[in-house]
Length: 420
Picture 1 (cartoon, rainbow, N blue to C red):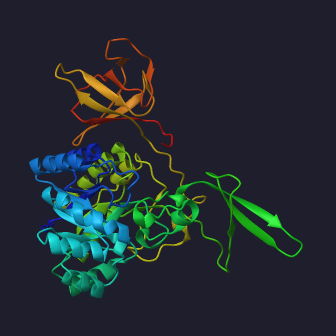
Picture 2 (cartoon, rainbow, N blue to C red):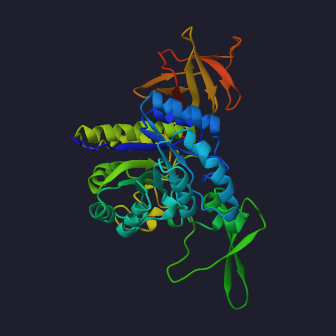
Picture 3 (spheres, rainbow, N blue to C red):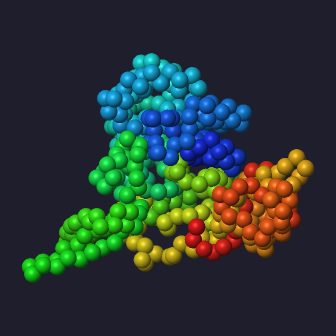
């Protein structure tokens, strides 16, 4: 049995995602506050949504952390000073922050608020952890670049602080988010919350030859005709995107090293991603707490969720070139395609909010927090009763017959075998 408190911390990019994260097993979520959170472009929260999210969490004995982790310029200081009162009135369980100036404002005006140091601060050694503890930080979100033995030493040296670490999701090509590609290519600063994810888009390689030498250029497919020179050293050229982090097999080692909160990246990901990853990691943590060995079948469940392939980052040692090698990795043939959100009506009928194309006869899974039921789509019609053969994503809400009982807030996924 594993007796210490272990937290599954999920991303909440919207109120809807917050609710699905909790329904599918999260102990806590992190949600961005307006204007002062990274992922600012995709952050759907306003103060009313945050208030409702806090209420939803309190009813379930769950936690909500507000993310206010930008590195602020001078012009952000005054509005933050005014708005921190509104955030504090909502009584979040903690603020996730990285900027020392903003942290000092919070400690001066609202010393009752807990501060969790964001991964953006790149805290990588026990002396830094001790420094931030003296500034009033109660939890440190560790840099993704740390090895397991380094995490253990930090906990041994500073035993009376909480440690949080990422276990799943996308990884930046620079130290935990401190990347300048977006600013360089699109004049959108990742450290101000407006990253355009330049590292994740398609590029073409072009060669130009002169009499004396060859030159290579990168063409951004979002802006065709715009070229960036590629430099190469004796080890080659490295562009740009890594595989996704997946440490589900190593939760026990991380807990033994001192990690108390297991964090999943993905505030911009879909409801399906949030729900499925919550459900899968919840099972892994439940197994750990009950003393059961890791269930390798959970990897198959993760293959129902879109990814760029998985690797273990730096936790178990330095990653090899295979962490960025797509051409020699196993193709990601996802066994599921997210189709709809399901809701049960008072008359026991089921309606589907369609997110991707579905049609009569599709083999599907009905996924709830506790169960997975295989069936097929037996009937599909408009809310007015007009029968349909298919429905397309974003087209609205439809009545659906699946031939099995459906719990409220279930997910419908098609057993497709095609990439999402």
